[in-house]
Length: 113
Length: 114
Image (cartoon, rainbow over all chains, first blue to last red):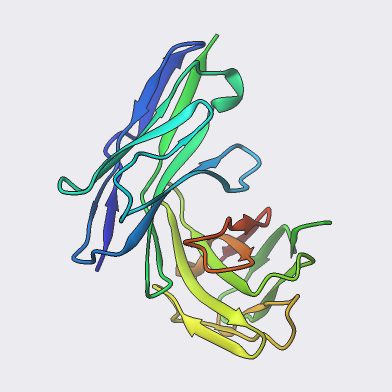
């Protein structure tokens, strides 16, 4: 079975600074997708960024970017110019062609004013 | 558009009781999903549907049933509630496969089984 590991239960960052959240995964598949989701206190899950495994280029969405290392099975999220509204739980997720999602246990991000 | 709506927001059940968690989306999405989120954990997929009349099991389907008679609705049924089913339940939908399309999540239902 696929597993997704987030080894940082909590992280903090000063406002306007940069923070990187780590994620590793285990799979024997070659075709899959990786995601970062944000879950604010409202509990809704919000898609932050998506990466296709067959693409070597790292995905970026405004202040959010990923470092995708396929051989190392690593998928970290970098948040630049952190804002107070970035404070939330962040979940790394894996999806395979069997239409199955697997989520990590999450990283709680605190943004310090 | 209301997006994905879930009812109820909160519910307390006694062991052995049954209930249905409702999920409705008004975006004409083909794909719908049910997840559970236990405290301090990520989401686990319970069931999903790729269209009306078609459902399939996810990672943790035991103790649950689903149906998809319409595109809009995807109810989740708990037949004999157990304390292990205490969790927050999220419904989600997407137009295409979640790998290629954004999943839209509902606000969640917090269920406690005592």
